[in-house]
Length: 186
Image (spheres, helix red, strand yellow):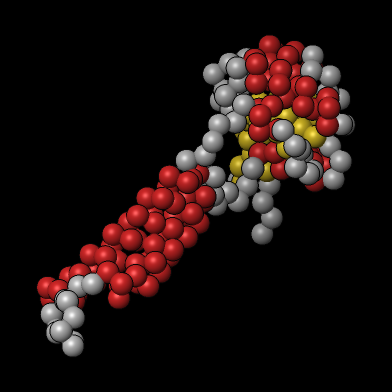
């Protein structure tokens, strides 16, 4: 069964660059312009790009800390309940609940819930799973993995006005400014 693509609403505008210095200079101008919904696509990591884009730190460490603290608390509560309340059993006169004997389980549950928090937190924060992206409709964008650099400003950005944004992106010195449309399967 073949699916045909139909052109939908405007997703945004994309500008193409050939080298890193021009891209970084353009990225700084986009940041200073005040765009909120935009991104940069490069074939390799560019040192200093986060600072040039003005990207703030992620919330993931706090999510992982909360997961780890939850694991530690659950392990402690679970072992206390099982050993001191639900089934107290005296072995060689030892206390019903002692921290040293319970450390391995506390550690393991802390690590387990931290790992789950990191894994699922990344999925949620990155909006995954995402099986399709409108940029895949652009023939030029296929070079983003080999030798071209792109800036994409999304149409949902509060500062986005088609002609003004097109003029701004053209002034950055890129090769081509291209409209990217949403696409949907029939």
